Amino acid sequence: MSTSTANEGAASMMMRRRKLQQQVVFWKRKWAILDAINLGIVVLEHIAILFAPFNFSWDAFWVAVILHMVTSFGITLSYHINLTHKSFKLPKWLEYLFAYCGLHAGEGHPIYWISYHRYHHQFTDTDRDPHSPIEGFWFSHVNWLFDHSYINEKCGGEANNVMDLQKQAYYRFLQSTYYLHLLGLGLLLYVVGGFPYVIWGMGVRMAIAHQSACLVNSVCHTWGQKPWNTKDLSKNNWLMGLIAFGEGWHNNHHAFEFSARHGLEWWQIDVTWYLVKLLEYLGLATDVKVPSEMQKQRMSSTSTY
Image 1: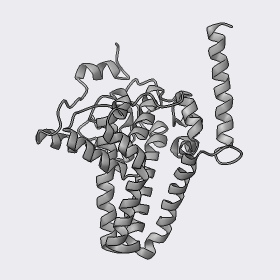
Image 2 (image 1 turned 90 degrees about the horizontal axis):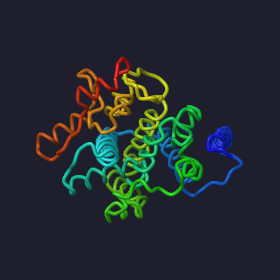
Image 3 (image 1 turned 45 degrees about the horizontal axis):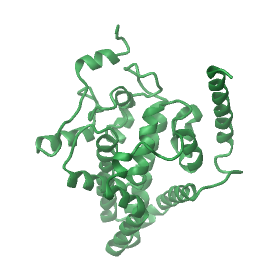
Image 4 (image 1 turned 180 degrees about the vertical axis):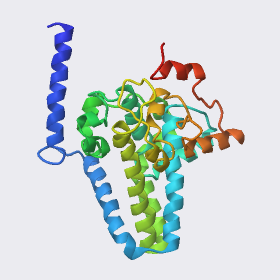
């Protein structure tokens, strides 16, 4: 059998598997423990939204707002541009602190999150992308979280693209104790402010954070503008740029994965970038990477290169 025939056969099998996957996201398949946990968390946090109006207080509301800001920066600044793409460097103590904040967003421990995001960039909008709209909008938005075995199959089995984190005892510790930290925060909120703090500080806050992250995966590979020749489906979406702390300038990001700045134009609001610049001004962030004008010219959709 020729190589091309084998590749076509493998592609055909993946296409059939993909169609089957769209039909059996929830039924008639084997569920892994992680699938059930992910589904349980998503269901519980959205049930919390239903209870939120009946447990409202301004202090619970502001607890949710503050925790949302802190943990979201933990994802965008730490998990994403610092640890995944190494777009800048931080002192180890600050790197670990930001990563710990990201853990409490409830999107997984650093090794889990960063492995899948590196696979996303390695295989963007192909059959091996963990979450691409080529398998359907809802698959990219949330359903991919509920079939751990399938995602591992797509990406090639056991994660081997996060050895830089797996070599560090701190990240291995977060991996093995991840859920204990979330439970600990929930217990602390209950002790301090009772059920309203748990509803708003855990449920509502995590639901909003999860939906923001999911919208980047789905919306920003479906609707928006594409100023750069990225050869994928990534789009710049101004609304998601606002909601997701700059992550919505997604075509910019896929064009220049190494860049700490996603909002490349002055009018493209990128709150995470502003925090990186503050850290750089304070001497805490170093080796901050942004694209040069030559790199922009080469990636421009109107480039003659």
